[in-house]
Image (cartoon, rainbow over all chains, first blue to last red):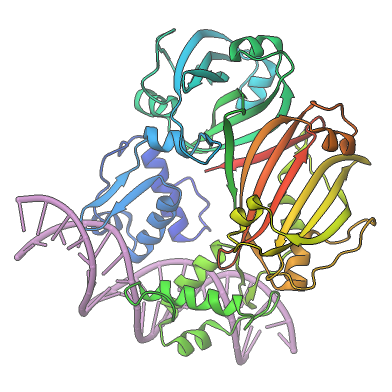
Length: 240
Length: 240
DNA sequence: CAGTGGTCTAGACCACGGG
DNA sequence: CCGTGGTCTAGACCACTGA
């Protein structure tokens, strides 16, 4: 195990299981062995194993279903849309934007991208530009950078409506599961290029978000800049 | 116990303890009885009690210190500032704004306030208006509504710098502990009155936040509108 | 060194879901 | 019915703190 030898047993078991899931020993949607089997395999009691599983479950890495088994969580549009995409209607109702990619390139990371993604100098990234539409109206512009090393052969069709949420695509095609994101929000006047895409006057107030997404092993895997027209949207969050 | 009889023992114990803390049986900063005493008192095993305490600890209602005891968490400026106030410097550094109240009134709740705070018609609220300053410059304007029924005799000095964070004041003087907040963010053009207070041109892009804060028993206890000038600030959040 | 919370175990029993 | 995860208990032992 990679964990410190001094850490409690349950913490080492948790790390061991996390690493095995990240390595693909059990893929998203698949079942882990039963608790009896796993505890025997790891040489710990079932109670200790259950404590480790409880942590992974709280982090939504696994799902436990009584009477059935324990499963590696699969990325769903549901979760991508309503957990990691916090925009909602002014009245609090859910919105399901459509999405269209209008640029996809492979290029050296900018200084900002390299810093956000903790990449070495001259590393290359895939860079996506897309628009998202709410009720037929362009409401969001996004620019996304992905380390090429983590997303070899990344590809998506340009100009057509995207069927999958990006985070579902990351997991299904590249084995990368986004577990948490950090964001920095500010209100800015729309730059001319963005204003054009959103059909706004330059300088109109829009919400700007700089996001970094982290995977199961807490590696930075995506950097995303979003420009959101909040006339018909609210960005809803909870702090606890 | 008020909880459903069918809920697991540890869940009923958790609710029982939460209610007792909310009722002031143990006040913020005070110690709970030892685990042995509590489990005996509740008629449950120490293991089951520990599970209930674990939930309360995860919610930061209590703090456990090995070798010492278990304590009811006390609101601190630290937590109020860096947990429930997510503004930081552009470079990610912490900021500690000063704060000055410029209006305090007692009035019937507006329709929006009554809805957000789940108040009956014609209920009265304390309404505060304050400014917060970062590096000597007005950066945030806030309007805050508190149900009079929950904050009897609420008072704070007008026009001078406030020494305590508001959430610390709520707990210390009114026994109300804020546990979580929900927020809806949008980018708007500064209304003239706000622009004046922030020394901005009317229509300049600012971040607007509508917040509702909830206490230990998950009652809505504060509604707050914030207008934030994000030229020198970022609003930093994490989703997981 | 006494007393606190933290870890770990073993085992009985319950609740759920599918054959 | 069997096999799964969920609850609850009892007790041994560890780690930390302060007198």
